[in-house]
Length: 264
Image (cartoon, rainbow, N blue to C red; front, side, top):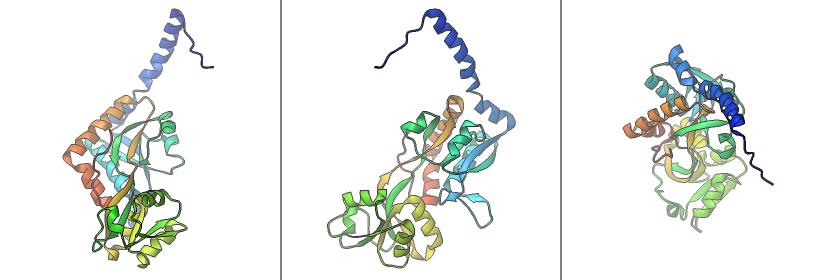
């Protein structure tokens, strides 16, 4: 049975007195960043096109561009902190990073331990094909072959919308699916933005492009719990970037499509 504890006035006052210093302390991140004139931003280095190591051995990608964009708008130096999917939230909690810009999706479990800004970029499953292949909608897949990884999100979403005459060829992993597309075994490819971005970067001769989205799962910037001043400041930067078209430019550069209407 759920029980709600009712505190007496003295107990409530004591509780608020104990909480107040914590709330005040929780608002220091932005001030700290501005005081030291640098911001530590956690980024991926193994997840193209969002973050990867270039031929010059320096991190690059959409998330790195966004990190540098925020640093420029704040007027501070950006210190890039490479992280993995497993440790990126811990880096926020232990103050090794002020922000996490690392293809971070928002869900109820994560919201219990960190806060999120507005979305800054799309993360999506979509259909890709060479520019010469006329595909704009699911209906255009009629009579065409589509490569997809068996059981993946894009497989489930493609199955919902593909016309009966589409020739869906399922492969056991992303490498096999991409190889089938690169070798010409299938005309079109249904996959995630990161897989497609990496494939297009490695195979420019294919002249492949984004055709239409199957499912959108936008990325958000992670902020330590309670750091509202920093979160709201970053939200201001994101909102201005959206209005100026800068988010669309970043997404177009790295993902081949505009950012579109991202959630706040």
